[in-house]
Length: 172
Image 1 (cartoon, rainbow, N blue to C red):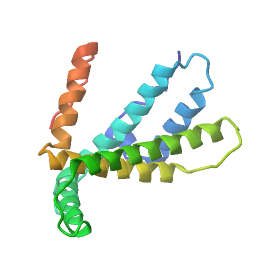
Image 2 (image 1 turned 180 degrees about the horizontal axis):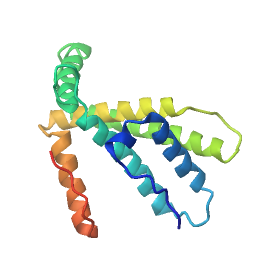
Image 3 (image 1 turned 90 degrees about the vertical axis):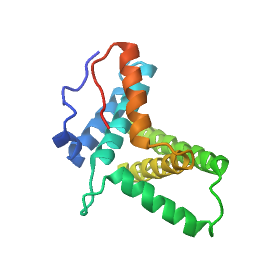
């Protein structure tokens, strides 16, 4: 099986056109008979994990970590949106399920278009919006249980790397 040789660096992650090209390459590879289902899933997870890591390293103009800013402002918005109702993790989990389904639907449309099939179309920007919604929902769930997205993601990523014998590790 051939893969792209593009290394995932900060420069790569900061270049929207190169990210789009990598996603387009992944979608084109779906038609390649060598590309097995588990490799498609892995490619999608790697791309989403890369985007998530890019978000977690980002800082706003005040120097606040992006995920810390998301946690703070997402909590403020939830309180205003829900008229001060207590957080409901079951509702939040259901909301995340809906957003995850929307991510899958946008990917389906991109794959269908790449294959030249009939049906509705979408854009990479719409996929990005849905990934953003899913991350916001995950932050809400994590916040309601006192979990840090950065810490739980790094812990799970590292645990998987250990389990499959890979050297890549995340630090928080």
